[in-house]
Length: 121
Image (cartoon, rainbow, N blue to C red; front, side):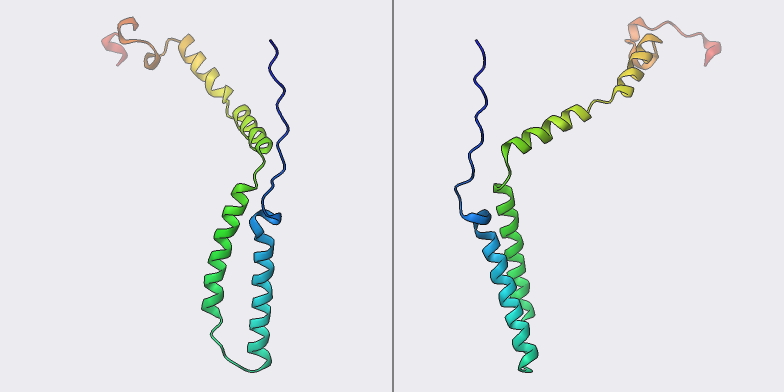
């Protein structure tokens, strides 16, 4: 029995631009430009730093949620396969094989070790 072919991932049906993130950025940029223009143009010294600092934190949180939901499953599978393939440390494996072949004491069970002479110590 042959396995069923892997279905193509469906395109997201959520809000365009990853949960409205692009609109959020546009609103933030527009409000920031307007706030700076009012402060500079009219000579008003409104305290706009703290509202925009708080809004920046909200925008960052929105970015993290939107980017977490915008990940394609094929991309995740490809990255996982790549990491699995790169994780093999063949030099380490050869080192262990050589140590076993040389019957190094650290890899041989104590009952199978050759007794040491007192002069070797």
